[in-house]
Length: 353
Image (cartoon, rainbow, N blue to C red; front, side):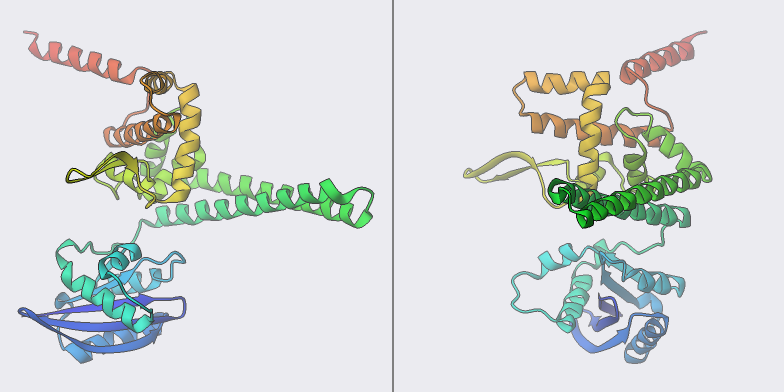
């Protein structure tokens, strides 16, 4: 039986595709072509694959890399809609699997992606489109983030102008207009937040999860929405450890033989934006949340560096949020003790004659 692997290197304007056909233990490169990254180009891509291989859809596995600009979105959604199997893999994962390579071009990249798909077919995760409301929430969240950055730039520039303007009328004008622009952007941010809240309220699942995670001191709108978006309403990860790893706060130990034994530390492979947001939440929670404050202080008393203690609080927040959503309940003070009391009463009731 033949198996077909199509590696696709995606860019804004084009798709570079390489076909590898595998039969038994032998494989060969069957062809390479370049297509436009639009509906017409994707249609030509699938027609070309069928013409070259003559194999049914079930025998073909398309594989592409995730792109930061979202240029692979149309490709994945079109192939999924037409019933093709499409695997969307991390670009870093593929890059690290290739090993040492000098030089770079899109044709070679598409071949490397096809080879990766062939070697790691057993761990392929088929693409499925995100829920429409989660996708809309993602776009609103990202738009708000861009507005926040834009306002920050305006305010920073205005402060620089104010420090040097003196009695210069032109610089005073520039300072005034910059502050007016920052105020206008601030209003757009508020409008965006209102739309985000309305969208969450319109969906029962999103509303329930959002209510659970924001019941924790320290997690408010931005952190709560980010959790919903990047976990796809807590369906993307099977455990809080996986979620903490994606956030970049899960520690991993390095040990090899007798010469290497480093303490557990976090990896720099993470979503840096989420990591900074959960850091802000942990700073607030370690002060305002009695249980987490006590936990943080215990870590300090044991001699843990403040950075390590704070990272432990980040992990706690993620574990608690994950647990609340999965158990469909809000956070409450001394929740572990209260839960044990409720379980004890339930057990007693079960044994009553």
